[in-house]
Length: 225
Image (cartoon, rainbow, N blue to C red):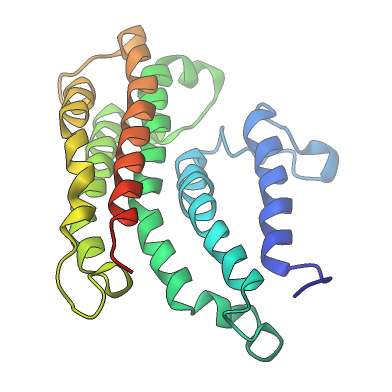
């Protein structure tokens, strides 16, 4: 693909710029291009786009570039779908899921905290559309789901001990971040904190994601290739 415009990278670049305007530009950020009533932030799509772009896209793009640069797939013959089917890309997609869960948790805390003012602003986040209880369940599902995902990750073929199908226990290192996770879950659980009291837990969930990801990377580095 050298010397050519890569379709995946072009798509990621264009849609990322679009998302930035569509999320941060207020209630009607795209009126000048005929999309006056579309806003990611105001339509309740923020959670989905954070999961897709701060989780999946942010994680799989580096392996994608590695596959292309190293010529691991005959792109001219197999096309971009051949790259998407490559074992490394598929593995990175699985790894991206818990990272996306954690990233989405950050915006959920923000939305629960701001839901009352968002109602008056016409900002229909999921916390506004489906209520506080739904958003708190969403948060707990995302955080707990990130840790549950360690089970299939530890048994994934490319991440297991080379030459065997043995469980890679190094990928359970993110469990060391559980004390921080419990702290955040208590704040966002039933009868948890609300309003301005949740301010520390927006950053707290971001810190949890950082801890989880650093420990996951260490576990990946311990794989005996």
